[in-house]
Length: 164
Length: 185
Image 1 (cartoon, chains in turn red, green):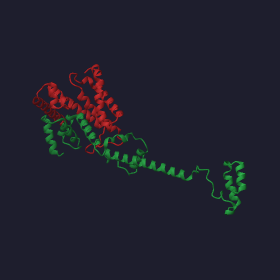
Image 2 (cartoon, chains in turn blue, green; image 1 turned 135 degrees about the horizontal axis):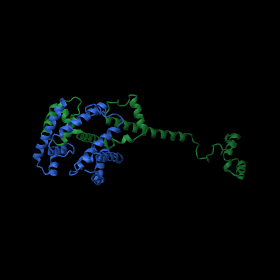
Image 3 (cartoon, one colour; image 1 turned 30 degrees about the vertical axis):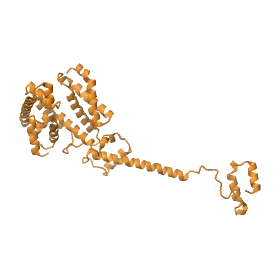
Image 4 (cartoon, helix red, strand yellow; image 1 turned 90 degrees about the horizontal axis):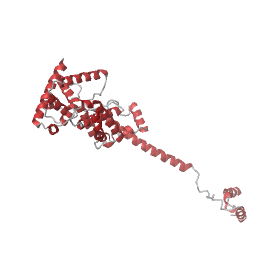
């Protein structure tokens, strides 16, 4: 998606994103901050987004992540995660995260274009099989089979790379 | 969730049969510190967005619970004595200890101190009002000492009568005062 295309839909998108923030924080001020952060993130990566696809589900997922990040930042004490550990960002953890991200990207490069598209629609945009089917016109069993094949390929590749 | 259940969910995920909600649940479960290498690969595949979305729903559900209401995030905006007292209490070991508290326990403490602050303020206002009521002079300046209206025969001394009359000097004319003196009222 080109920047000019993004600018064209930005105002409408912002309203949807703002709604997500309002539902989470219950205050207009915090929701505005979350919406601003989300729009910045989307602006930064908009050239990597497929223009033919609906950007709204992705924007809502990014908005939810921004809300959670803001919530963690604003707490006076560190928030323990579900299993007791704290969410840290030490240099070692950042390095590990970059390394694993690179591994995932390399594994995704091995997928066929159609498989990758469906994989990303499920993982990035969080769409259900029904939604993907209505958007792409592919029958649901075929989507399930292709997504399964893509996931197994990526999983096998990641396991191989993690052992090295 | 038990390891066996997680394993089943992972298999379902690899078969492409999980719903987005199940994937969110799986992402949360895979945040455990010590998980097998294979599970780490699944965690990586599920990605940060799925985890973030799961966290979003979890926090939102907790904040909408009846005990917490919609005020979960409001105490953060209260920058007053209540928050200060809360911090001091926490540092002195009276509040929830660092690391062990849940975000919701923190909110409960902040609310308790906020209500205590309100009650203390009201008590302070009442005490000041009581003090003023007791110590300020009465506004009724026309009040006359009881001996003023009595004559000498009632047992009052000349000083009593004179003092009582002086009390009303500002309010009586000379003629009135003279008449009263002669009539011994």
